[in-house]
Amino acid sequence: TEELLRKSDKLSVAGQLAAGLAHEIRNPLTSLRGFLQLLQNDVKGKQHYFDIMLSELDRINFIVSEFLVIAKPEAIHYKESDLKDILQSVTALLDTQAVLCNVVLLLEFETEIPKLVCSEMHLKQLFINLVKNAMEAIPKDGQIKLTVSLQGSNLIRVRTEDNGCGIPEDRLKQLGEPFYTTKEKGTGLGLMMCFKIVEAHQGTMTIQSRLGEGTTIDVFLPTRPSGQSIVELT
Ligand code: ADP
Ligand code: MG
Image: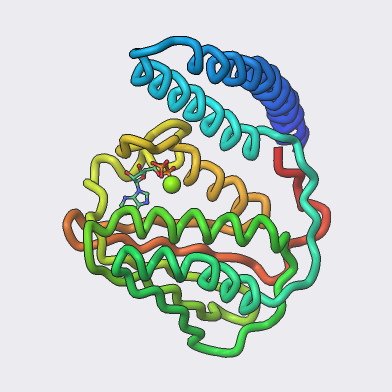
């Protein structure tokens, strides 16, 4: 346990530094953006360059903000919650987007499930990330299915299945590494955040995939993570 403690001490220092750095980057970005917009009105015939500069600045800002979410040393507030409410609010949030992408988004409960001690906000973030990835993996029509089941009496499994592009086998182990992305506009931070959230809830997450067929991600969450080992998300 001593080794573990020391390791998490280090993590939290690194997290604090990263969060500080992210803030320091964002402030000058804001002033750069402002002055660029001012100049844009004075310089004629070079609008295209300004558009590129502004959108590149926005991109830096977006990456830094995503990073901040992960790095920010943030205490998780756990409370007894209803996973049904959490998942329903996730699907409600993403339904419109799904319709626009011709994706059918389904949520199914195989059994009644007990209440779960968790951080609602973080679990929402987790499943939003998973469903968004699934949507982005579906080139045109497709289906994303969330299935909730109970494994034994106090382990909940939430399975996210898509029939998207799939992931080549030799890439599977890279998932969750920071900045690993195959998308032009991706950040490669989403899955890393998912793993962190699951870990903080003392759960596990497994990914299975077949190229060209689809991806299945299982999140296992204990209904009562044991008190003393609830960690801060740093
Ligand atoms: P991002 O979405 O910004 O690329 P993520 O960490 O969320 O970053 O995902 C990392 C990479 O994992 C993605 O770029 C994609 O290649 C792959 N991936 C994640 N989820 C899926 C999925 N459901 N189907 C296919 N590939 C996926
Ligand atoms: Mg993502």
